[in-house]
Image 1 (cartoon, rainbow, N blue to C red):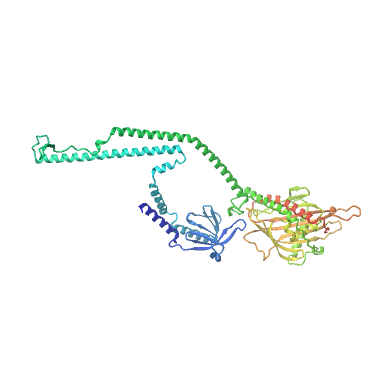
Image 2 (image 1 turned 180 degrees about the horizontal axis):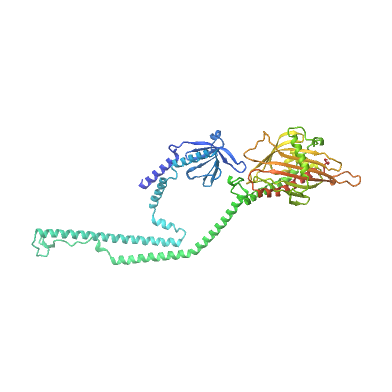
Length: 599
């Protein structure tokens, strides 16, 4: 095995040892943190464990044996303490992003410190590790051949490959010429040393034998022949070098290199136009992709979950316009889904017996009786007043017989705008309208904003306490409401007074339906007053639905709570209340068509 191979192997073994072993002096850290799951469920408590530079979470501590639900390697993680929320920390690795909340700032700081200790002790991303990998790359690069690297850069050009092959040949010729010159220079150096050695020996002989040789440095051999004392010294192979030929070859080689380089330049210049066209196409493609990415990003902001920073809250990163666009897009989707399911709902026919009229003539006997009576009297006194005077009602919507009014009221920055709507519906009675509005058996048929509801307590035959959770419209938080709903028949003071029915809904508290962190608890005070107007039939004919008109007065005082922008709440109310009234009254007309009249 070569030195380079053994070095690389030892470096890899060291990396594996760091990866698989436990960091010295670092212990496991675990506990409960709230993790943001999605826009429906929000924050959920999870058991989080920090071990071996890995952060894992489980649904609960008891379910650890079933395996973790997700994990992050902290080697390249980015940990950010939230700017406003003192209990929150965000951890991101590439495209994975975890939003976590501790129970208090002290616990959050403990988690951040423990994560940093694990990162520091694990050895990942350290300077020595980077140097080690860099050295391995350098050694590997040093062993690669120059010719193979240069030729691989031009794999797509056939002509360029040919010219590069020629340059490789020229390089070999130049290398051989350099070797020849080097041998010549080495031979010349050897000759110089021999001449110096000879001169030194001659000088020493002249000192010992001062009489010069008269025969011109000739001596006689034993056989009587003469030869010179020192033979002329010549370097080995030096006399065999053809310098003129080498010079011609060198000139031809350099000329060939220059010609080949010129040809390569010409080929690259010719290809420059095609490369420029390809570059322009790629740039145009990139612009289109970036435009599509920005458009998709905006759509995601408007209609999809993007984390807790973009939902309703005091420090939300989404502005009022984006908030309204997102809410409007979500409401449009709900309307589309409602239209698709409307046909299925109309096929359902339920025959539910209607209680006797006497049951609704009084409040009944229960702990909220006095409060119900107070609400009924307030609605009959104030809700039926005209829109003029000092009430400052503003007409915001007018569609045929329906008119919607609003008064702008804010309290501590929260919109409390009272809404009042009047409408006239033909062919139904006030009793029928109030019955379909009050009876929970029909609630899901006409109410499209409810996710779920249940009757918490039945106080009497005409009074119930209802818990109602509404569908979430992102980025607004989900709302729920707990209210008492009572239905009453208002007695007539004289024979000319119309037949009047009323349903009042107002918020109450109940031990079996406490507020939760998942939803914002809204407060309501709603009244629906229905008066039946009957036109006399012709001749002796009986009263039919053609002779009926129900005059509806709907009043709503809602405190939505939370942090939704005032402009958004007003815009949504202006859009949704007329749709609600039209949808509900159309439903009542469909349900009562062809049935006996219920006065």
